[in-house]
Image 1 (spheres, rainbow, N blue to C red):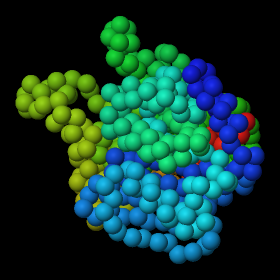
Image 2 (tube, rainbow, N blue to C red):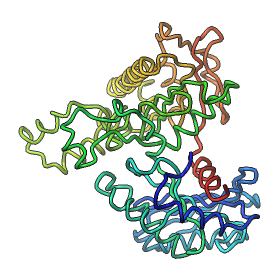
Image 3 (spheres, rainbow, N blue to C red):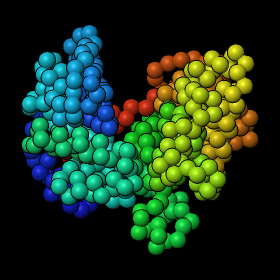
Length: 421
């Protein structure tokens, strides 16, 4: 990917000029509303030097967890009051400095920020300047839970290292290649355009990384491979990737659309919201909370952890069994739909927490799809592992793979490619 054309071009050139030739390290920041996840990577060989998490920001007691991978030292944990993201990043800096990896290091080339929503404008990693930051702020109405936290992290990092290139890598960017007939909803065009209503898609860094890694696993060029990627975590999404380009994805204007998720309903008749307003007297905020936080697996059976659901199924729990069947049914529908969209499917790739670890979900969602050329090997599917691997039968026309995602590496890769070009 390359940065979008436009106002960021001058900032990009300046960033490339500012980054020292020997600077190969990238700090990746993922700023949530009450947490900051981070990783420091050396892009000379894509190794992780440190990783950590600051959580419960703004609460009475916050926690800092840091793993000094470069030194091989023990994981460090401490609890202390951390009022805001600025204090959180200062805590991150302290931990890195203790390992000789401080933010003042001349080896640090850039800071890469995960930004959830980039709208239609940002189709690739972008060096952040005032205008870019202002556009991310303008997108807050379509990402009210995520973009404000991302912006806070960016502003704080810029304050700590104003001389260092700061790069935004957008969850939505990979999906900007969708054709209009896939991205547009069948709404009045003027209304949709006025309020930026269209399918944007999310988990884009994961879908980009996994689709490329799947092609590598098959020993083929990514431009020659059609992949259905199933990113199955507490949030879940599917994408149809044709020759390395996304042509359809399950999430839409928000991450609510699509697959059944841990707490989100996924696809639902829009009239359900009207019905709940008129018949149940629920407010817009109450319906929002119901669909985003009290639905999906947790709404169906009271658990959003697939491991616990599996345990309950083993004990004959009917609610857990039904939740599992609904979850898998939705997956199968999307695999079938995206087979039709792509015309030719070379691989189905499972990734993220559930996708990588639940053999039961993989088996059930692929069962009976022989007519689509999909056949699993039961033994291969049952084997656990941390590396990319095929789990399809030798007779399967479509490869089925488990491909661990690495969103931090993808963000670091895109960030470093931009500032070092």
